[in-house]
Image (cartoon, rainbow, N blue to C red):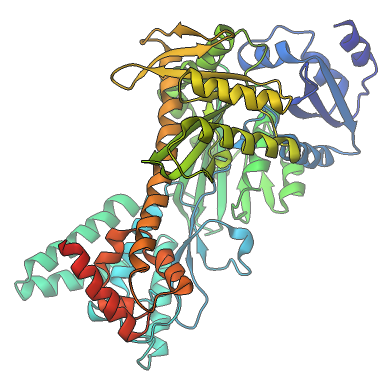
Length: 591
């Protein structure tokens, strides 16, 4: 602590970023400040609670970088968080991207759901974002049923099913009325902007026509579409009638958490909203500023105007985001901020009990495991499971938990080279392959390895880890007769550590065990299915490696392949070979 006190005395009263480090010299938090000396010192001369207290308890050193302006410090802060992925900077770990609906700018347009906006050269026909991808898909499906748009990615050689059921105009074969396409585009764009008048009028007319013809089933189907539009898609109007695309951001602080609401105003209506709750570690204004800046770096289209609470510096955000950012203090726009703040308050008050339970299920359960295993820190856990079918299609899966939460983008699959029923050999291969790669590529090492197996598997894993000169604890999970988690297998020599089956730790271990098991089984089924298809295709004359690869890519499973019509197979194979395969699959089904 004397070392830190001396460093604090040297801090300048200038803007910049600071990096907090733990005893292993790992960056665990990055922040920015107008005055570095005052902000960094505040971590050590005040009493803290919640996650800030946890952060401070782990700090053993810090670094700082001085910059010329607050905007520079914001840019640097975001870049440093991306570089180090610190434990306590949780915002950029949320790599969720929100989908948009795109009406493609092609001669004959299509409706698509897109996420990666960075690949789009033109963004003038993107609508959203949609916090719920299901809502985006339902909207696309609805419009595709109402309007006979093009459905295929590339033009097919002949008229497809969509043409015959009236959901496509046969663009691949028939001459099209360009004016009709333009009218469809106009109505779809109006709908996606929130004006549903064109569509509802069209549907009401269709419904009445079906009713007059006594086609009540079709009339009911149209009525259900109308109900979906009226109930699900009708948007709340706001008082501003200038039709400027703008986002409204509100917040509310509650018991160590920051609740944030973002309303997307498009064409004078609230199109969608996003809710986010984050723990408060920094000053609230810094947390909110960081959130806003990072939010718009993750595949979100920046609107013409963003309204923010007056606790954040709108000038910094305006310079960083390159759009109009305003912090209104009176008038209609101020009332919109108050509305967003009120929604943030309601959200956190309703959800707080669930947040506390989730904290107990994740961080606190992880802490309990750390203490039981007598470890100094437990930030990263890697779990392994193996699967095979009588020694064939041998695979392994690895899942990762970081600070009690799944890190799905770091999961890995392994196809085992030794294709025989040898659990120990499989464990040896996967552990070696994983941690040789960790050493070779200087990847992040786990604090703990959990193998889903008994003492034999633990010993094999430990042998490999020791041979690579790695200091990583390896434990196992023992199951009872009902195949549920019963005890931890840990220490040296290995002993059973009983776990209370009503405790958060038990449910934590069970969640991890289920996750790695389901991940591995899913991969095993996929490999097995591809292997079975491959074996079947070997029996059909005229299907070589290239055609086999095309069929595997399209159908993936035997079930899907058997459902394929002769016409569908002919899109990949010549007619005579398609007929051979089709007849072979019929005979195969009858066996």
